[in-house]
Structure formats: C-alpha cells, structure tokens
Amino acid sequence: MEQDLTPFRRSPDEVMRLARMGSFHKSRLSFMPTLLRQLVHERWQFDRSAWEIDATGEGYAVYRARGPQRTYSLVAFAHNLPDEMRSDRVIATAWDATFALFDGEPSAQDVARLRANVPRQEAGRISDSELTLARANRSVRLWAHVVDSLAAGRQPEREQLESVGYLMRTTAVYGSGKFGAADRAAIADRPEFRGPFRAEMLTVWLIRAFTVDLVEHAARVKGGAHAVTMEPALRRHLGVGNSTGLGMAPFLLNHPTLINNWVAAREEALARVRSLEIAQAGALVEFSRLLEEARVNALNWHTEHAIQVEKVHKLNADLEWLDAHLKTGALEQPYPWDRLYRWATRSLSLEGQEQMVSLLIDAHGELVDDLAATMNADEQGSFRIDGRMSVGCLLNTLASQYGWVRGIDFGRQEARARFWYVSEEKLEPRLGQRQCDPGAELEQPLGVAFDVSQMWRGLEQWDRQSHLAEYLLAHPEHRHTARRVQIVRSHPFAEIRDNLTSAEMLPIDLLRCKLAFFGATKFDPRSDRWVRINMYADAPYPHEISAPLQA
Image (cartoon, rainbow, N blue to C red):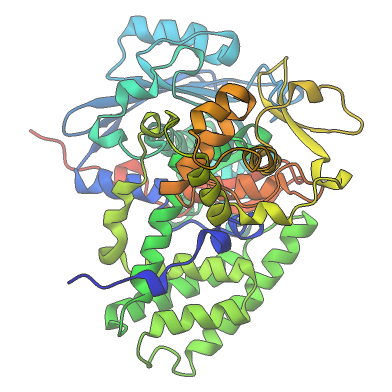
C-alpha cells in the first residue's frame, strides 16, 4: 500500500503566494538540469560542424546535436557590433550574436537563407525548419578582460568571471511558432522535446558553447601564438546571461494548467522527501555537499536592487543558521526531513525556506526524478467550459479555492491601481497605472482576483440549481473567469492567489518564479519589472557529455 502523503503536502494557499513564488530556486526538476540528464542518458553526440568566422569577428558557426532519432543544429551568427549599437532593450535592432535552432542539418542554401533573416530577428522571417530564434549581447567588460588575458597567454581572473558570470546574455529566445518558427504542436510528441521549453533550453546550452569558442577565437586573433585557451575549471563557472522583462510575466496566468503541473511536481517531490522515516547515508552526504555549494553561491550572488540585496542578506544568514542547526543532530530523529522543513518554516525567511526545499529535492534524485515527466500539459484538454455544471457547484469551488479573493477590498484605489495591456509597437505585455496612464480600456484579462469577485457576486444572485451555461449566456464577459475556476477544481496550483492589479504587487516575483523553473540562478533585478539572470553556470559543456562517435 502506498503511503499517504497528505500530511506532508503544502496547500496551494501557502505555496501560490507571490512573495513565496518570488523566492523559488532552481532544483533538479528545473528544465535545464532535466534536459542535461536526458542528453547524458540517451548518449547524445555533439560537434561543431562549421566555423566560418573571420578576424573581425564576423561570420557563422554550426553546432550539431545528434540524438537517437534526430539531429538539431544551432546556427550561430557573429557580428562585429559597434559599442553604440549594443542595447538589451526590446527595441534594439542589432546584436553581437544571433541564432536559430535548425531541425536537422542545414544545407548551404539553408545557411544562406538564415544569414539573410536571423540577424534581423523580428524584421526577418524564419521557417518551420527552425525551432527557435535568439539573440545575445556581450558583457563588454568581462569580454574584453577574457580576450586580453587569453591573448597574453594567461588565464582571466576568477573573481572577475564570478562577479559577472557570463560572456554573453540573451535578450530573447523565441519559439513556439513566433516569426515563422515551427509551432509547438509540431514537435511536442518528440521524446527529447516533451518537457517544457526543451527546444529553448537546448538552444541556450549550445549558445554557451559558442560564446566560449568565440572569445577564444578573438584571443587567438589578437595574441597569435601567445594565446591560450581557457582552463576547464574557469569555463565551467561561465553561464549564459539573460535579460528578462515584463513580457514573460503574463505567461504564468495564461497557462494555468501548465503552471499547475510545474508546481505540483515540485510539491510532490517535497512531500516524498518529507515522508521519509529515516535519512539515508547517501542523502545526508549529498545534502551536506549541496548546502555548502548553496552557501558559496549565495556569497557570490551580486545584486544592486534593494529588495534582492535584503533577500540575499537573509539567505546568507539562513544558510549559516541551517548549517549550525544540522550540527545539533537535527537529522537523527524519525522523519528527519519533515522535522527539518518544519523547523525552517519557523526559523528562516521565505528565501531561505525555498532554498532548502530545492536542497531537499536535489539530495533525493532517485526518489523524485520521475516527476519531471509530469511537468508538461495538454492545455486544450481543459479549455472547454462545462456549461452543464450547476451554479451551486461553481459557487462551492469559489468558496473552497478562491476564499482569498474575499479578503481584497476592491473599493480601495490601491487594489486596482494597475492594468496589463499589450504594446502596439512591440506586441509585448506592459503594465500601466490606472489613474494616470491611457489604455485601460485595452486591459488584458489578467486581473483574476477582480474578475472572480465580479463573477462571484453575479452568481450569488442566480438559482444554484441552474446551469452555468445559462448564466454565461447572460454574462459572456465572465466566460474566461468561469474557465479558470473550472480548471482550478482539478488543478489546485493553477492560480496565483494574490491580486495582480494591486499597487503593492511586484512583477519581479512572477519573473523569478518562472525563471527558477527554467533553472536560472543569480537573480539580479534591475527594477521591479526586469531582471538579469545566469543560465547553465557550472553545467557541463557539450564536448564533456558527448558520447563517442560511432565508427
């Protein structure tokens, strides 16, 4: 008989709060490490099949990834970009490097077509032979330091590498049909892409290899015979940076079933660990190693944003306290991991609590890794509204799942201070101030709490035995809200249980949550609306996991 995990599961009311979601950390269930484990398990092969980059840094390269059934190729274009043209803003029109992930091995004609379009990004067009479109800019200060160091025959300073963490940062990685790329449905059944954002994660990982190859190429051009390559240990510290803004935030609201599955997998993993009656020796050793690694990472987490500075300060203190607590024999009692978790909820900040959740999950790979397969979703399956449901049944769901809405006073101006809209120029999500910005009439249906309160009030005036379809025929403006409520009936982690139009709402919490599931680290908010991160830092490179080529 399977153990009942109910006592060890956290409730959605506890988990799906912005402050906690904005404190999530990467775990072994995040998409980057999950992808790498699959590539290793399936013995993928990687090589660089083309390198046509000249002494000025202009040209292209092709990186091949060959799996059991298919081959994919990152086609990377390097550009000799003047400093004055370099910008991370979405309105930029030129970048240091641009990329496309090609489905298969590109011919010379394919490369020529991509060369005419990929560097133009939104202004160009790609085809359904491409799975992603991306661009990146150099970290100018670190790039120059690494080139100068390697050209002179010496290694770059580790402190400088760690202070920045990446040679290039992507400013966009597009997929799922954008700008002509293959639609998600065309690749969703492929085993290597069944997990969320797999094509995008593969793209970024191959970009990481390209950036190191390119900086070493620049060093050879500058230093000639004196130039050296970067030591493997230093290479490992480098990831790929990313600048992400509000455009990512609405995703969590527009894909409730998918978000439910992400969070549900993480929570199930935590519950499994907490339910263990004893701590296995291997898990104890691994948890200790991971804790020390987390302490080092936190000490090297550089940020200038006041809120994140305070969170990192608390995290450092939390990890020190956690280490001291373990030395008291905290894991020698029955159900040690559950006891440790309960201690953390009483003693640590949200940042520290969620870091410990990731440590607990990561120390128990064999117990939790199967949950990665549950993190995808058939979103069409929950899209249709069940009009046969009674009004009373929907009211019961509102009472059980949306009680938090009743605590919001929408009569206060602060409760509806903001509105979400899509910019006409870039077709990107934006956040306006309702009292002073024009465009509130174009508001997107992302003010879930207010919409639920309006529908709830309307439903209470109807006969509880009547069908929901009757109500929606009279009030079609509530269709999207009724759909959300029905989804939450079977997907309890589908809804963020906070007011997303509040004056106090921090959009950065939405970004942090999604990026933690990607596997990002070193969150560095530049405001409450955009953040810089690091991806794949300390991960292996393609040549390090590549299976031997078949004869």
